[in-house]
Length: 133
Ligand code: NI
Image (cartoon, rainbow, N blue to C red; front, side, top):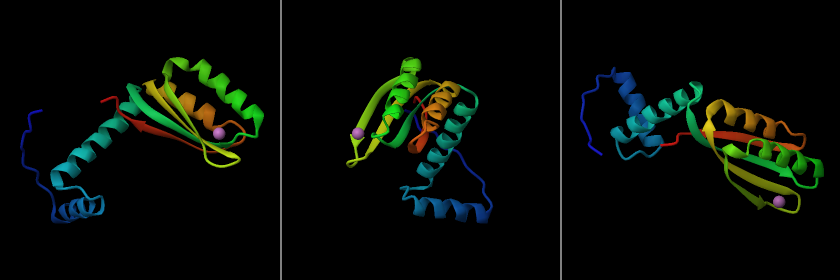
């Protein structure tokens, strides 16, 4: 990919803030930090504008709550067209960690995540929003 250079004018305070971020997040240089910030902002925009995006739904739950798994499977079948893969890890005797990779319209992915996270017995749930590219 062709890299283009352009000048950026920043107040001294803002430049110090940028350098603080570069150092804190261990970016190799300012350009990489700016790339990251642009992409982060653009991904947020894609989700707000209900574009075609990708993400992951992460759930932690106790598998002894039987109805929970039936409910979760029912919901996942309703949204099967959005689900790319499901990874289930047994964390310990009780707890499971499920990572569901998803791709589709942002609002549909949010609906799916909200329904899964709201199931009674889910201890923690999170939708990780990212981009398709
Ligand atoms: Ni399990």
